[in-house]
Each structure stands twice: as structure tokens, then as C-alpha cells.
Length: 249
Ligand code: ADP
Ligand code: MG
Image 1 (cartoon, rainbow, N blue to C red):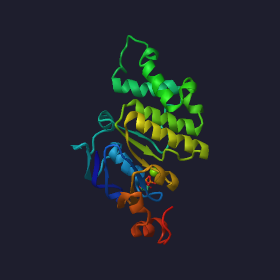
Image 2: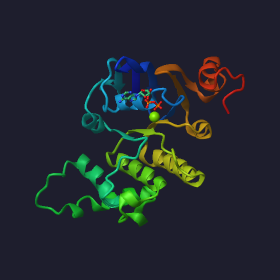
Image 3: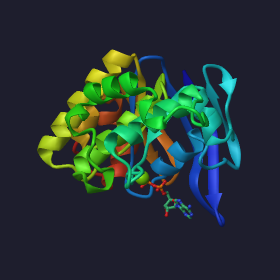
Image 4: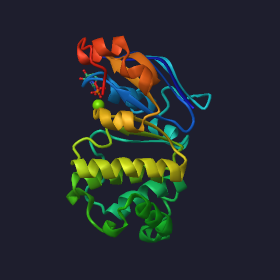
């Protein structure tokens, strides 16, 4: 479904992403792992159009989407969440979610219908599916960190994606919030038939939900394979754990 070929992006001569390769099949959950600064977020920014690569290619269902602006990538049904939560703080949960649905329905510029009455059923249904319906009138800036992360997933789903990119979905969450969020992601994948690409530091989560893993170090792909293949790969041990002879997990 998604193919990343030799993707490279430099910032002032520093190669943040350096010859990265990745493939994701339809229906898979693929994890990208790697130490801080490995280039995971930059890779997701390149796939989702926030940054333009210097070289390399991104193919989605066979179409070349390299360097397209984020809104065009979103229209191809690729949505994402951010490592640092990115919601409209002064709007309610309902309004944030409604905006994402309206932007897809292209009804954002209707002058004659009050916006509060648009896509109400769809917004409520989505909020029920992510467990935020009871809090729909709460102001987003005042929510717990865990709820804000989930709200962002709801906003990503409002774009009706087939392909969902999650940048550290459980970062900063309590253990209880983390468990709930992972169960939620698994359930949403089933419900919406999603293909998911995510990055995450918690190896228990990675090995628990990923069907395959790509390991990134210093901007490049070390290996992509099944959990088993990655777990005891020597290059991964050297690069990721500093030469430890103990397998990951
Ligand atoms: P990760 O998500 O794996 O922790 P990032 O993709 O955020 O890594 O960052 C990879 C490297 O690129 C880091 O060294 C980071 O400082 C650098 N980097 C990321 N974005 C920028 C930017 N906009 N300008 C300059 N350097 C950046
Ligand atoms: Mg990151």
C-alpha cells in the first residue's frame, strides 16, 4: 500500500533522513523504531507532505505522492497524528472533531447554515467510537494529556483515512491511559479497516501490536522485518542497544 524508496532529507547539511526504505501492505500494522533523533518524525513528515524530501520516492497504492502538499495527501486518505499534540485548544472536543469531518465534506465555506448544525450525527458517532462522546463539550485545551492524544486520533479519523500514521501515540500517557489507547487503536483498526504506521518507544507495545517493524538509525533503515526477524538481528543489537548480546524483549 505504501512504499518509501531511498528517501533523504537534510537540514543545513545534516541528513535527518538518509536513504530510508519502508513498505507497508494493506491491513498491516507496521512500527518504526529507533533511538531519539533517528529520524522517525521527519520520515512521517515526509510521507504526510509536511516536509518535501531532497530525493527518493513515496508511492501510495502505486501513485507517486512524493512532495505533494499535506491537504492533497489527506485527500488520498492518509491521515496522521502528531508527536506533540496539535489540536485547536480553544474549541471543544466536538468542534475539533467536526472540523476534520467538514474539511473532508468540503462544507467549510457554507455561509447560510450555522456550522454547529453540520455533520452532527457523524461527529457524535466518531466521538462514541473513540470514547470521548461524554466529554464532547469540554474545551480541548483543558483536557488530560491522554484525552488530547485520543482527540487527535479522532481528528485524524475525521478525514476518513485508509492509512493512519501515529507518531508516538502513547507518549506521556500513564500506564492505564496507555493500555486504553492501545486497545482503542486495535479496535479502530478493525472498525474502520485501517492500515497503520506508527512509531513508539515502548517495546512491549511495539512487539504486542506490530505485524512488522522497521528499524531506523541515523536517518537510515537498518532492517524491516517481522518481530522475530528484528528481535535478534545483529545490526539492530549493535546500533540500537550499543552491541548488547541480549535480544530486544
Ligand atoms: P525522531 O522522531 O526519531 O526522534 P526526528 O525526526 O525528530 O527524530 O529528528 C531527526 C534529526 O533531525 C534530529 O537530529 C533533529 O534534531 C533533526 N531535525 C528534525 N527536524 C528538524 C528541523 N526542522 N530542522 C533542523 N533539524 C531537524
Ligand atoms: Mg519523533
